[in-house]
Image (cartoon, rainbow, N blue to C red; front, top):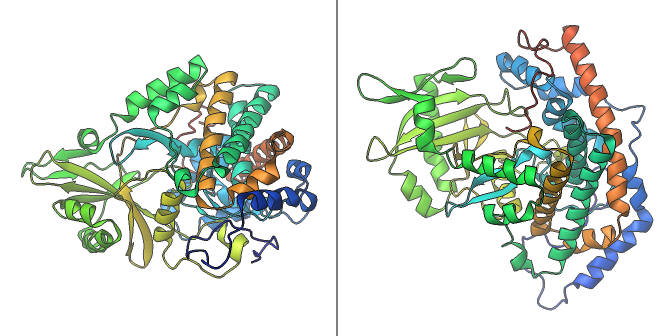
Length: 484
């Protein structure tokens, strides 16, 4: 099989059928050798090269194109968050980096990837058992694709975040190389594990604390854990709702960030949620079937998602203190899709794509993950407050950033290894530091590119080419907010 970019697509298993009982499966040693052989076609030092082609698309044009179909009045909010810093720009421009990395050296090994694996897209959340775990937590762009694409985006984001924390270039390089080394080591470890056992590997809070060797990182994790444990539906009720005189609890508006929907829209969403119940496990469908919709509002979230439709739905159980929030987020085609298989659509429902690939990449996922359709727009559904939290990046010094980077590198490797190609990736990476150094060189070059592109966006805003919220330019650089 060959992707639209001309790279041969290699997979360890597609997961859609059993291997033939009459045919001996390719051994891990053979797959590892296949990966090693790819070094001749794609030398590992070639991963270091970032040389913008003369025909590189204008990033502002790509950004404006990605705004098509979004809610017009919310686009200036998105742009305002993007011009705040180069990191904010990087968070909102997965579409730009997807185009860039699609033109770069790649082995053709394509597991399921996050597609937007920047440093802020790893976070805490509650497992079905109620335990806090750390893992990838954003899958809007998840899709089969080159493992290098995720590693490149994560590496570049570490360097950009390091600079914004005031770190020196050597400290940024150390953090990137720590991340890639951890990715390399974890892939090699998991490649030797039985396929089923790979699927059980996860990082809960206890293991996370043990993995953090730096004092500053342990302090940041402890603070994040304490905060995440408070981010539940019952804790969200007094913050986001109020009780009318008639006794009904409704969502408090905060335009344009939170706005209640019309009765007509509420009816459409209610019917869509009925259909959503058919996409989750029967037990959880029965549980949610005991709740009644109280109110629905449109709520702006994140950076990359701003302008897409996103709703919070307040549900009430048999008692007025039994309240749950669901979140519906619009899903569009992954920015990676056209670079993998052109215009053909492998996924009829983009919400289903997000859900299934989230479940593929995460060891444990929200049991309420499902999908539905409203007004011909596709959505995925999840819990709104599920003990979600992020490690505050602006609190990390050089050693702590390097420590945290190694943790998320392992998590990224775990996600890739759960899907396909671990043995071949391990064979290509090898035991030495060649790829660590190459990705360090790339990350520095692409951090420069990100800062240059960010400056172009600021210029485009000043010239009126791109709309922005009033006062956003004056606030530039006033705060560094990597988390969602």
